[in-house]
Length: 519
Image 1 (tube, helix red, strand yellow):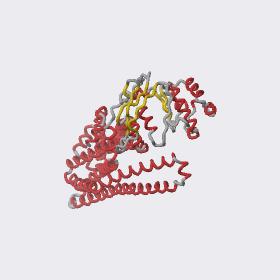
Image 2 (cartoon, one colour; image 1 turned 90 degrees about the horizontal axis):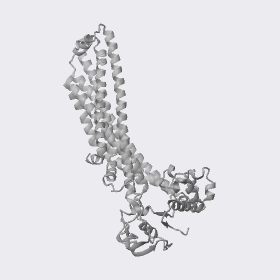
Image 3 (cartoon, helix red, strand yellow; image 1 turned 180 degrees about the vertical axis):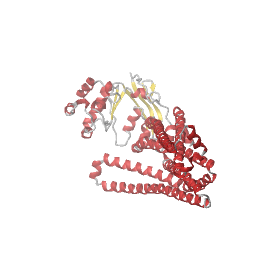
Image 4 (cartoon, one colour; image 1 turned 135 degrees about the horizontal axis):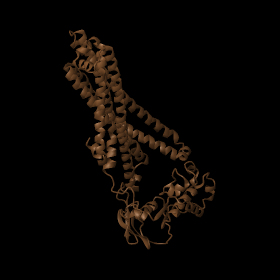
C-alpha cells in the first residue's frame, strides 16, 4: 500500500478521496436495498402479525391506511421505487469512479511513455521494445483496473459486510455471531492457502505474455529470413510451449477462483445447520423469521464476500504491476515533455575532443577511444571502417544521443550536453540505414514534427522533386495525402532513404548525417 500511495499523483489524491466516498455511499445503498427487502419478508412469513411490529404499526396509522391490502400494495410499490433509485444511483457512482480511473490510466500510460522516451537511446537499446510497449499499455491498464479498482470495490464490499453484521448484531446477536463464525474463518483459510500461489502465477503469466509478444513480432519482422532458413517450426514450437505454460497458469487461477465459491457455499450450508440446531426448541414462527432474516443477510453477504475474495485474488494476481509502474513513475527523468524549440547557432565547427565511449551495460572496454576530430561547417566528410567498429555509435555521439564516457564534443564554443543537445538536434537531420516510416500519410512522414494542418504542402512537393520521388508520388492514389500503412511494406530501400532525405530538406537542417550513405 505504501508504494501504491507513493505513485498516486498529488493532483489525483483529492479525486481519489471522492472515489472512496462514492464507494462508501454505494455500500450504504446496497445496505438500504437489503433493509428494503425486510418488509416483504415480514409480509411473506408473518402476514397476520404485521401490525404487531411497532415501526410498521406507526407507518400504517401515520399515513392513514385503513386496509391491510392497500398497505401491502403501498409497501411493495415503495420497495420497487427504492430499488430503482438505488440502482440508478449505483450506476451514476460507478460511472463517476470509472471516469476518474480512466483518467488515471491515461496519466500512468502517458507518464511511462514520456519517461521511457526521455531515458534516451541507450535505454531503448538495452530494453526490448515489445516489453516496453506492454508495460506502457497492458501493465498500466492492469494496475488501474485490476489493482486500484479492485481495492476501491473491496472497500465497498467490506463496508457492506460490516453494516450487515452490525445490523444482525442489533437484531439477533446469535445470527451475527454465527455469520462471523461461518464466513471469516473460511476467508482467512482461503487467503492463507492461495496468497503466494496467486502472486507467483500472475508474475509468471506476465513474463510469458511478454515472451509471446516478442516472439510474434520477431517472426513477422524477420519473415523472409524465417522462411529462407526454415526457422518457423522452431518458433512455432516455442510459441506452443509458452501457450502450454499460459494454459497451466490460467487453469490454476480459475481453479483457485472456483475454490472460493465452493468454500462460501459450504459456509452457508454450515450456517443453516447451526441455525436449525440453535433454534431446535424455538417456536415455529420465530424459527421461520430467523431463517428468513438469516437468508436475506446471507444471500446479500454471500456475493459481497465472494466479490471481496475475488478482488483480493485480482490484486494478488496483478501485484507485479505495482513494481513496474512504481519504477517508471518514481524514477521519472527530469526532462520536459514539450522540449524547447530553440536552435543552437552553428557558424564554425564541430570539435571532437579526445572522446572515449563504452556502452553502460558493457565492461570497461571502449568501443571508441581517444578520438579527436574537427569538422568545419560546409565540409562533406565520410567515415569508413569495418562492420561493428563503431561508426553508427560515433554518429549517435555526434547527434547527442549518447554522452561520451570521457572527453567532450563542442559545437562552435558550446559544449554538447544534456542542456544543449535538444537545441543541437533542432538544427540537424539524420538518414539512418533503415529509414523509419510511420503509419501515416506521405506528407506526415516527411514533416514528422508537425500536425496535419501545419504542413506546408507546396514545400513537401518541392522537396519530393529534389529527391526524385516522382514515380512513387504518381502511384499514390491521393498523392502526398495517401496513407503509407500498406505502401510502406512495398517501398524499396532507396525510396525509404529518399523519404528520409526529404525530411532533412523539409526541416532545412544545418547539418545532415547519413548512415550508410553509399547505398
